[in-house]
Length: 338
Image (cartoon, rainbow, N blue to C red; front, top):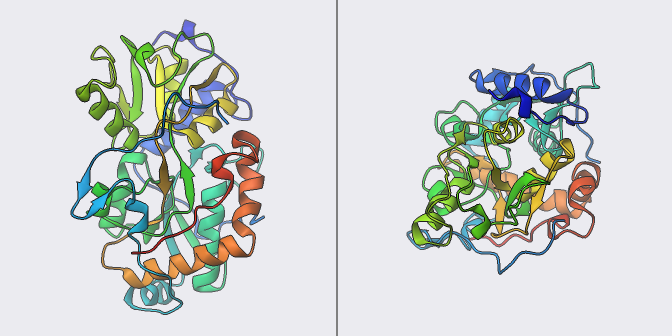
């Protein structure tokens, strides 16, 4: 590796060495976290060069422009999936452990508990289903293992910055959206890259395997929306691994969700967002297809979470410092059910 090109500045993480170690932990299969976790508190980029867009894909009557509207209406009722969680006595949730301010281990907290916006939501779901926010068992899973973890029953749900798309709806069920974001480009401040445009010609662009970022890169290069010389071959299991590659000089840019990119820029002041968001996407809680009672219950919890101020308190604590109070992401998306 070209260690001589390594940039420093990961505030709160102890440099790239610590970051790489964290990434290695996430890649070393699935990490089972302790059953008892301390409860998380419930407590912009420049404008784009054009309108936000989504992938032009469809699954039956679904289009990615309204994939987030395919979830069933909320309900307080039970059912087989909810009953199974209650009988077990804890909620099993797939999360990230190295996405700053979303799901990560605070190096200043000796307990090693996970913190972040997604972690708060997982605790809230456990509180409402089981009466105790700490009755949640976290499993750290890489980006490319989110769907398999749900399908195999390894977890009851995934709360891990997962975009709702039509293709994913063929594989898992989703709650109503709980966050709005969009794809953006992250690159060194000194780079000539200006955004998701012709400036990516001849550049090495990193993305996570199985991510919507890679789907957009592949589709846009094929259609000519991106230069044919854009190298998109660098894919990694976890999107954070792209930041490490960028720091090592093994990639020229990263494409990922703007919300995640903003957090990465906060970790490393030598990189920045280039251009505005070029898509509009929504995160949802992923669950097993057929577990409609659990999906409906989560949708009820999300309704309450928005109304009682829990969502806003969590945003203000974790995400406002990187995304801002006036960002389009600063308001919980309004649900529309199928």
